[in-house]
Image (cartoon, rainbow, N blue to C red; front, side, top):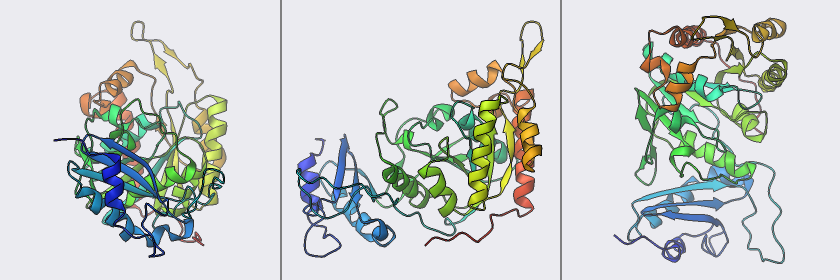
Length: 369
């Protein structure tokens, strides 16, 4: 089957009226970043920031007309408030909107608790913890979903050994299922080496679609692997998604703990409870002599938890088997479930599950105005 062309996609989109009803979405310069990969078409629809929540029908209409183009079998469109929808010229480029496209407030379908795994900085093993935590919760009998919200550096597909793009019926995305958990990541939508050169509003819009337009089904827990830091994407998710709490990941050294404190401060500001702190890469035990070495220091996360009045969830050792199983796409809690390293993750999951079962929820006092 011949690959569809960009002109054919744009011709189809001319059938969809813009919000003003007088022009098409193409004539109104609303269509951005058309990307075609064999039979899969992806594009963004630029809308006014205050219209995003009202234009879901328009987004679905755009996907439907493109799905009818010869050679197209999958379509993914996202709403973005990256710029105004009025027609512009090359001489007068638009100023980017600062306000991100809105996420839907309230519950997410039949999802029970939503927890965020976060870190103040990159390189502390946050995604490894998120994956093994999600799998550990599933091992303990919960139905679990895992959303990789790290748009710029998605690593969940590699950590879980996922390949291929998720299915879609043109309206909703069907998540991958691996090791018994449902998974969604931008890394499954693009080639592994593709750089996501997006502004903040486009990132928030993409995360919004992965949360609201994925067929998660009935879940006890949805684990969000947040981007590192405390920027626009993290703050918007924390404000708009009904989080039951956050798990903060840090290594023991002072500079990582300083950033972890900032992460906790952000969640405190938006009244999302911190379920606890995990100290990753806590202790290295030499596989030859058995001597324990504290390469990054030791006990710093426990002391930080004590200082801030939050729970310390546990320590994860710096161990070769965790790195090897992660690189192989077979996380340690499923490939070596009886190992001490896997038990460390299972103990942390037990503590998190106990907090969720006890009904520790985010306070419902956030304003969305």
